[in-house]
Length: 250
Image (cartoon, rainbow, N blue to C red; front, side, top):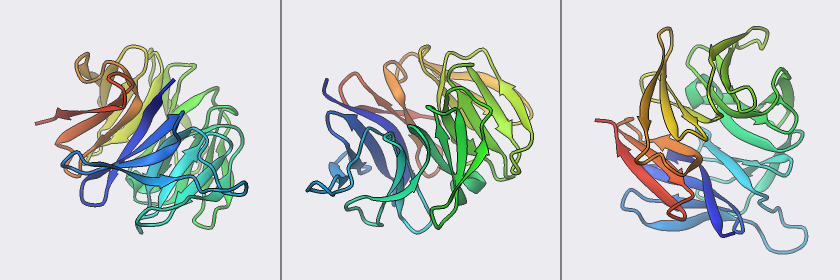
């Protein structure tokens, strides 16, 4: 099997950063002009930190990139790219990462599909169990009010958890597998439902609607991101191989 792209994030002057997993394990950088380069790859030597199926990526406010490395840890890449180092260890097979406060501040929330858990990681790398109420959490997002949204692939549902981790409420259900979630610039949550190749738009307090399906979503592998103004949606796909499709939201 060839290399496959997965989760995607946007930062630093509109560049896309994509986790590429399986045969090749590294992080790609794609400029707005479509120029692709390797932003971070594993180091050389037996003691080098290795990417092991990187599944999701998120930037902090200082330009460091945090990667869900599905072996059992979270890796961090210095601002400007380079070799990764181990930032935190969190159970079995972390799937998704998202910073608090709509992605803007600590802690870093991590879903661990292998354990059915969600962790909150402090800026010093200390991981604290946030919730253990799920079976296969594969997606996470946060809003500006301290709430944490978790997509569970086994139940086909999206849940909202308050900032204390004490109250869990079902946001929407009857999905195939909510594989990824992202907030746009207006606080709406977009949910990519794997298996049905459908993108849902969830408006807090209103509910979900089908946003787009079929063209541009077909063969999606879980990764998508908005540009800085939420006017364009980028979706990574397995076919064509290593494709990223841009969908205008205007």
